[in-house]
Amino acid sequence: MTLTEKNIHNYYTESAPAEPRRPALAGDHVFDVAVIGAGIAGCSAALHLAERGYKVALLEAEQIGFGASGRSGAQLIFGYACGQDKIESLVGREVARSMWQVTADGLGLVRERVARHAIDCELSWGQLHVAVKQRQRADLKVECEELANEYGYRSVSFLERDEVQSLLATTRYCAALRDTGSGHCHPLKLVRGLARAAEQAGATIFESSRVTGLERGSVATLRTAAGSIRANFVALAGNTYLEGLVPELQRKIMAVGTYIVATEPLGRDRAEALIRDNLAVADVNFVLDYFRLSADHRLLFGGRVSYSGLDPLGTERATRARMLKVFPQLADARIDYAWGGYVDITVNRAPHFGRLGSNVYFLQGFSGHGMALTGIAGKLVADAIAGQSERFDLFDRIPHMDFPGGMALRRPALVLGMLWYRMRDLL
Image (cartoon, rainbow, N blue to C red; front, side, top):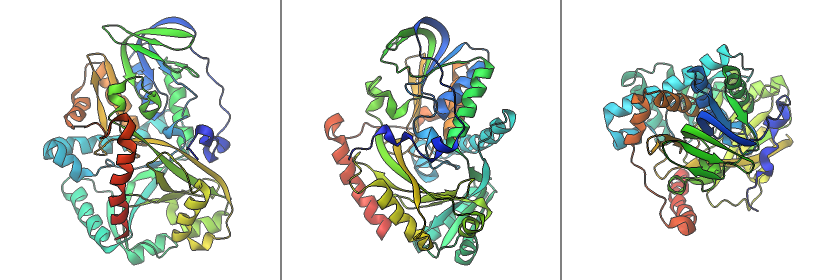
């Protein structure tokens, strides 16, 4: 079966309060800035631009938080999907240090925005990166020392097996990196809260307004089925959901399916016995498992990806099997929700931010590591539009290549390439 958008109905949509729909774009309008895509990045960009006094339109093809931002694993984590060593190899040590600080500031921005706008998104701090194998234990220990000594990030500590087992009711992990500065939240409540804050600051949001045409120029024109917008600046934050609107960007990213299940409510005692201190957890395999507790004491567990875009084994059954490798004591627990969605990856798993011409900006390539990075990315693009582009321009130094094989053959090529990483996880 193909991964479809039917998966939009999930635990998050069922546990968030009902949200009124915004109108679709109709007629012709003029704005200072048009932002495409109302996930965290787009809502953050609209919020920061509106606060600066710009007249902002935010266009969403479906509804607020429809894509990855509203249905993700929701772990707010430092760094980049490719790892800091990879960033250093791509841009050099000094630039990499500045880029690292962007991610740390992203975590602080989440904290600040949630507090300032009173966003009830079940925000909780504390996260573990866990090692399955001894070589991963060694890597985590080195990373902990480097983060503290080289980057001044001192909210991390290294845990040995016994300490991990005091926090997690599983024998699967031999070590962990604990970070009190990372955490988790209800992602749909977060993105909806950012959207409301953007509206309160003066931004106008149009839902059910897929952009079908973009005419670039000193003043850009965006067209939907029932209207158009002329804008001095455009910010593209739709990632894989832009669906060919800008082909030269589409060649740099690939849509990858990822899956999550939510158990029935386990009760406070049973849930807190599984994961103490309400920590979010992710292992360090290339095809990783990640999990956390919900506010109503369910276990939310993600652990499958589909590079082919297909779901042949069934989301619920296969993801539940991965969950039971970690917590076999949940064999009797019912799965109430199973869903999936697409994340955008780049070839090197580094983020891809930049400009097309002088007035069209884009944010993409978060590679499954975007809950904190998307928010700060939206602020960076707002700063750049306002003429303060130093930190935004750091990301233009990262080289990005097209996925090999062209549009027709690149997905089979990716599937073959990922086999090596899957085998490495097993060794």
